[in-house]
Image (cartoon, rainbow, N blue to C red; front, side, top):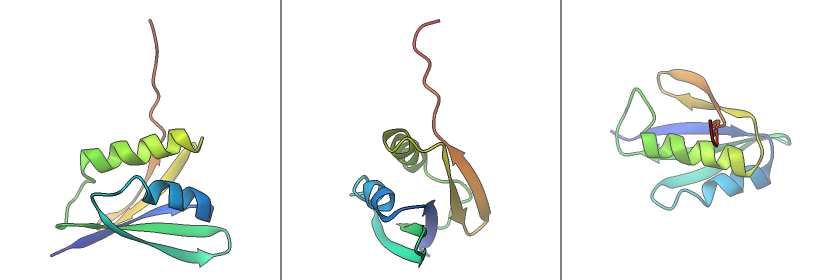
Length: 90
């Protein structure tokens, strides 16, 4: 059984920027209202956690678009996903 996750975005351009990073997935955009978009991503099966490569892709998107965080909706609930903090040097 396939599952769908939804990633929140506050602009169509940010949503499209994430979608272009998802060539391995089936996806579509959903406009909730003028300021809220969802990138809906189909997963091959129901999972409790996001696949690690998808999590990394979303975090790279947050960094690229200079977004602090997003909300990811799954069948088991929703969670905030923040931009990865990359420390250079010690």
